[in-house]
View 1 (cartoon, rainbow, N blue to C red):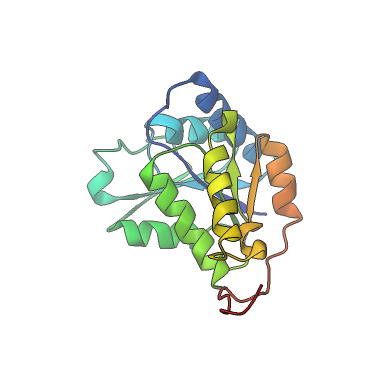
View 2: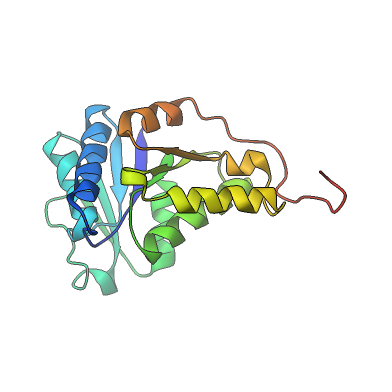
Length: 193
């Protein structure tokens, strides 16, 4: 892993545990000599993860649409801040620059980014790991829903297993290093069990 993309909230969330998790993730990415790629804002957990990586001596690349530079308050101290014209361009560049993707707690934008890169992996557009830093059980209900999707045959077990979840940043990154993408097709036949 040379570059990890982190998706996370532009808010801090209800408890300090989320900031602690973002700080730990950014610090561990930097300590491993891995570049952090993220959404370019200094707001909320986005700023926390970037600041932690910078404080750890890491390289941080932020990618932010021009329309959000003022609204999300672009981080002024990054190694590299890239201003793009659209959210689509932002996500494509984040994906191109990254060897894996981690979602931290966040809202709809975080979920949208997570689901898009996970879907791309299921379709074979990339073979990169996708994971969740499950701080304080934040993603427990989502992971249970993924199990429900699998049980109802809307998702193959191999595709469910593509989501690497852990509450510890080091264990999560170790699992990324060992990740092997599935080679099964996304589609489940009517008679397939």
